[in-house]
Image (cartoon, rainbow, N blue to C red; front, top):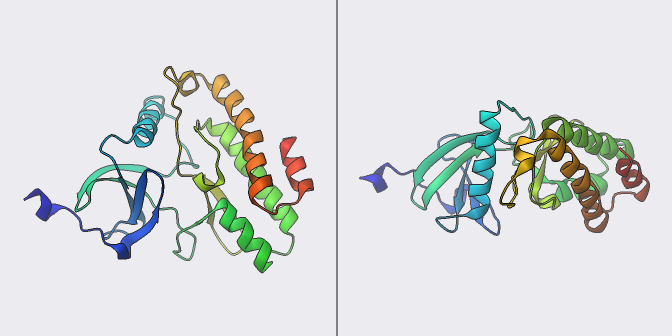
Length: 208
């Protein structure tokens, strides 16, 4: 009976496949996605849910993290339901590196230097304000959600939380802030290696 009640996920619903999980559009609500871990005890997902539980207990809200809505039975096993990060036109948002390449190649935005500086600076200040703890800063873990033709925001979608045994950054904001400032430097180094952002822009961002 449980299998009959499970939602059916097919290749048609597949958004993408990562190292630890596959993500599908929810067949009953395109504003949601369903993540299916490849193993029953996915450490990455468990870490994220633990962190989210702490934030809920501390009454911390976030604009950067997708909303988590619980679990659901699927034909591929237990699924974890999240807000699906989409652009204003309904398309799944691009990763940060894909977005940078797309804008630089198409030149749809006239002043790309100012656009990327404002996009990343706003993200940094929001990240600091919301004290989001991440275990990695690979640009693949960040999506750029386009709100209009010219307006966009960065969202954090993966490697949320930390693997340390006693995660003090979960509970002490000053530790979380120091951690973010360290990771910001790593984040910019990733962008320097993996994108064609101008060195001048990255230098300005490093001094925030």
